[in-house]
Length: 349
Image (cartoon, rainbow, N blue to C red; front, side, top):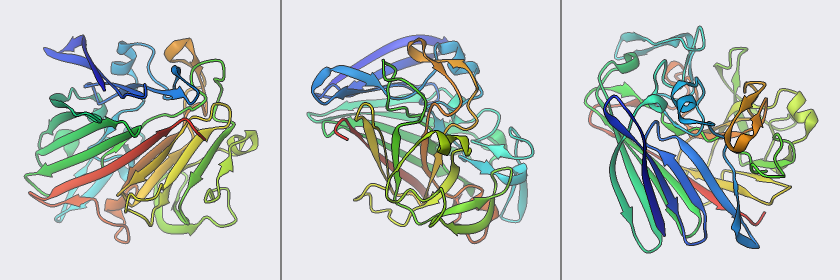
């Protein structure tokens, strides 16, 4: 196991640090304490561990990380996904939020957790794993959310090639919380196999999705995926027709929170690289990059474009606070929030 730590910048008298976690199999996670942004995830090829692919999209330079309105590979909060009409009621009081996708609120608002400098609380190494603990205190009424929310995020890499992300939070008032990770995956890598999302296989162990309106806000209805393009239970090879149909940006309902079986898989038919997802969350947003910029220069000199990355975001259902039939994202005063994500990195598909 190996750890690399490097100061790369300073903002508001706070250091921006790059941290790399490398296991004994040459799998690597490189991230910053700015927004918990994950700059690289390297997966080695099965037959040559010294040949690796960077399988997440990302910013070409640090200034874009600061200035971009996007959410590449970052911590999303205080509430991920959308809140309809940018408002919610809690304890008979209405809270009005910033409308960054008018008329709705998305991914925590104008300056969400992806734009915060997180404190590096601890880096711990054992024989078979390395983990880094990040902390951030979101003050009462930050982005107009009530309560001082003390947040802890743990990134851990082990020798089973598992990337673990744990989100913990506690508040001194009743509030709402829905934290997630927003990795943009492309398992073709950034080398000579690089292309858009075509030729990926995706599997989602889900029977249903949240129906949404034209603004991507849930209607409150749960729809069966049988007989629709949303049925990914048996694995589906993404092709041009699928992408031309608009792809997917929907929350899938998860029935298994045991973390014993994968709820999702994605891998490249070209490289054999991919992931399996395990989570204790009730839903997972699957997004095929349908709103990505038409042209964007990313890492390794590669041009990103429409549908060049895919996201799997374990979380509560979107806009759950405004739908009584959805499990509530309310976190009561002094109660503990815990969201677990295990991402099994694989080179043997």
